[in-house]
Length: 434
Figure 1 (cartoon, rainbow, N blue to C red):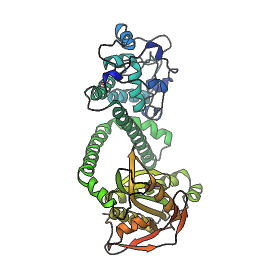
Figure 2 (tube, rainbow, N blue to C red):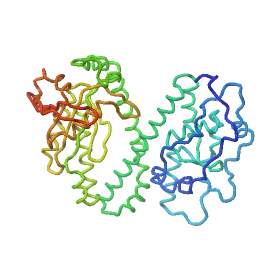
Figure 3 (cartoon, helix red, strand yellow):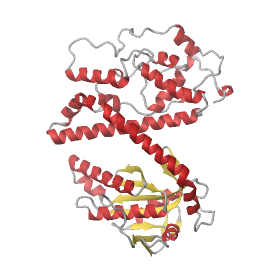
């Protein structure tokens, strides 16, 4: 970020919302800490992360010149460092011990102190905290540790050294916050569900007991998280360096250059799989049965897409969106999904559609006419069938692994007349799930 673009932040701009309840500040249980945080927007955060060198920042001047002591707090304000009077339950003690381990120490710092330690204005620090999905905190809330300050400094240093622009740093930070938030909620619910099933205890009891069991899992989960991130990043590098250009060249076949997706940068096979009669089925199921159905659906989709070399973009209820890097890979995944749901003794059949075209990838999701057309084709497909469009069929017609059967033309909202093609298995065994 250029210094001439930076602007000083004034003390008058630091108005705050009311302090959050004790459950947020003190983190009574691990689950409360996870579920009560979430991303939000605030117009007051439109402030540069870095101030111009040599320009004094009133916010930092106040924070540094007169920092509140780490152990003090005004009357009535909660402090995580001082336990409330009276007896403390075993669950509360376990939660506090786990919090200290996860946060790297006791909460001893207020938000101004953390911002000052990282060399930031308070509003700039809040911009990053919001990107990570942290809740609002008041000036007197003792809610941070030295690890919070170190993490803030790490992101800021990437901007100051010119490694990342401010916009990129915020986007990358938001990705980390949103993905880890969803991941932790998923893991907690999976562990609770397993305890309920294996031990025959109520859900509320399982959630309390989980706090005591998590210390034995923390290091292992963290190790697998870092391992998986490195493997996924390496896979992304291979896609960027090895296969991106080849994919773009393949996407030119059969194109005139004036298609709706022509300006978009990535060539991908985009597919949807949609369970048939899911809504009516879910109305007749109890909570446990519905949870098992959803989990079975997601697990089966994730396995098939992964084995086929694709990527599961997202699951929304009874529908899954996935991508692959070649038309053939997308076709193999689509046929395997259709077959798996047809043969499954519990799940209903699925409608599947796949389109080869260009997309825009942003915020972990994908966009563009190719995505919209794939969604429209899914609605046209019969249960157990896979549809592609005519251009995708043209890209697959020389491949003996696939049989392509033209279907009657259809009028599709936003696309006019299209020519669906039924995709079926030709030669070969398809994907092998071991």
